[in-house]
Length: 128
Image (cartoon, rainbow, N blue to C red):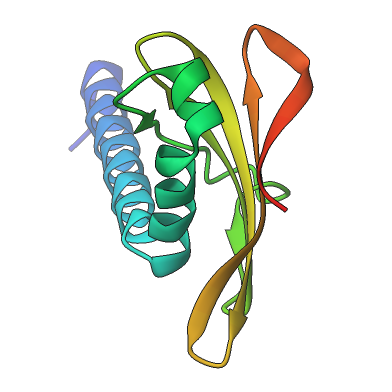
């Protein structure tokens, strides 16, 4: 029994769709899991309660999907975390950078900065 080229192309196309769909789904699951961690929630709470950030971005401040593949800027090893998160508000868009450390059982934001899209050469310090 021979399989035609057309059948092989269909199998490859459906297989490619399945693999890419699975990858997209798993990536979103990991991002959602990170969004539930204390260091992420605490960092966004700092941003959303900072008067300067609210002034420039407006309310509500929303976090966007970050890139998992950017392991230089987005990582956590269990004791330290560093993230680069796209954020936006009704007035402006920007990038939120934060660094966190775990002391015993609690996460602490050690540094956080907001870079606005309209001012890419400067950053607003959220946490020193």
